[in-house]
Image 1 (cartoon, rainbow over the protein chains, first blue to last red):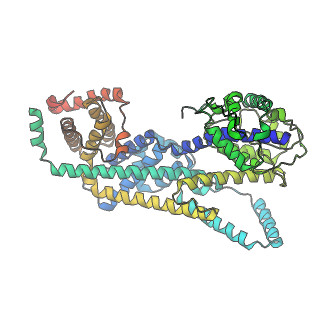
Image 2: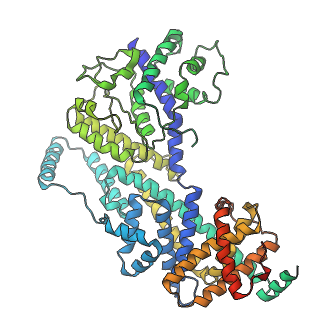
Image 3: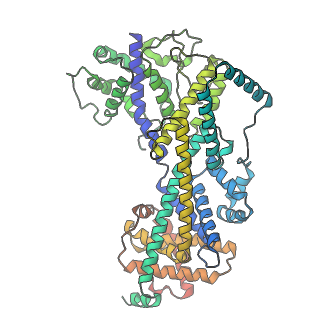
Length: 227
Length: 360
C-alpha cells in the first residue's frame, strides 16, 4: 500500500515535470532569439566597418580573415558571457594582429576581460599524491578483472573528449560535464552564426544584382526629386 | 515562456501535494488505476497529464478504469502541479532522470534510514520514515544550477549524509535516491548523479546534432558531435570566403540591406527605415572619429549614397525579402530611439547641402 501510493506520487511528479522538461529544452533551443540575431548582425557589421573590409586595399586572404574575425567576435558578444565565449576571445587575442581590432570593437569590455585570468591554458590542478594513488588503485583494479572492452571504450571516449576539448574554444580547462554543456551552447551559436552569415550573403548578392541592373545614381535621384 | 515562474517554497508545495495525494486516495480510484508496469505507467501518466492544462476539468470519463479517468481527480486535487513551471535549465532534467530511475524499478526495498532529514515531510501520508532514500531536488532557478549544484553535491557526498540538512534552503540541495541492490555510499551516489547528468546532456546533444538518433554509445555520439562541430566551423570559413568575394561592394549594400529589410516589417514607413540605418551609421561614425579614419570624406560619400539609396527604397515598392528571418530580426520597437538619431543624420546631411529631397 505504501509503495503503491508513493509510486503514484512520484509518477505524478514526473508528469508535472515532464512538460517543464520539454520547456527547459526549448529554453536551451530558444537561446537563438531575436536579440541574439540583432546583436550578432550589428556587431558583425560594426566589425566590417572597423576593419574597413569594403575598401579595395586589402588582399583576398586578409579580407576573409577579417570577416571571419568579425563573425567570431560577433557571435561571442551576442551570446554574452559563457565559458566558451571567454575562451574564444582569449584565443583570438593571443595573436598580436587581432588585438587592436578587438580593442576597437569591444572597447572597455576588452580591458575588463583581459584583466580576468585567461582560462584557455588553465589546466585543472591535480595533486601528485592523489593522482599517483588513484593510478595505483586503477592498476590494481585492472589486474583483478581484465576488462579489455571496457578499457578500449574508455580510451576511445578519452581520445574523443580530448579532440572535442580542442575544438570547443576554452575547452581545455573544462571537466566532462561542463564540456558537454558548453558544446551544446557552442553548437547552437555556431548554427545561428552560419544561418545569419548565409542570409547576409544572399542579401548582399541579391542587392548587388539589383544595383547592377539599375541605371546610374544621379539619373535616379533626378527622377525621384521630380516625383 | 510566459508560464515560467519561480517555484513557491518547496516544502509548502510538497506538503500540499501530500495532502492532495491523500485526497486523491480517498476518491478510491487507485485500486483500478495502479498498474505496476513501471515505465509504461509513468509515460501514460505523463501524456495524460500533459493534456491536463489544456483540457482541465473538461473531461469526465468516469467509465474508464484506466489512467485517463483518474485525471479528473487530478484536476481537482492537483491544481498547483499544472501551473508549476521550473525555469531551471538543469533542474527539471535532473528531476526527471532521478524519477525515471525510480520508476524504472518495479519495487523498492526499504532501507534503514541513516539519519532524519528535514525534507522528509514531503513524503506526506506515505510514512516513509524507514527508507534511507535521498531525493533529488533543486530549488532555485537560473542557468547556474548545474554549476552550483555540482559543488554542493560533492560537498554532500564527501561528508556525512546528514550534513545536507544543515544547508540553508536557498542553496541547491541534491538528494539522491538509492536504487535497489546498489551501493548507498556517498561516492557511488554522487558518481551516479554525475553520470545521469552527463547522459542528460548527451540526450540534448543527440537531439541537436542531426542523424544521431540511432547512435547509442558515448564514443559514437562524441564522434558525431566532433564531426558536426568541425563541419559547422568549416561552413563559417567558407561563408566568410564568399563574403570576402562580395565585400568590395558591401559598404553601400549594407545600408541598402537595412533599408530594404526594414520595409516589409515596418509599418510606420520611411522614418523607421532611415532611422535604422542612421543608428548604425552613427555608431560607425563614432568609431570612425575615434579611429581618425584615413578617408573621412569617403565615409561621408558612402553615407550620402546610402541616404540616396534609402530614398530610392522609399519610392520603389520593396522587393521580396530573400530571407524572412533576416527581415524579421529587425523590429520596429526602437522607433522612438531612432527618431532621436534622425536629427544628427539630417544635421550632417544639411551641412552637405543636400537635405532638400529627404522625406519625413
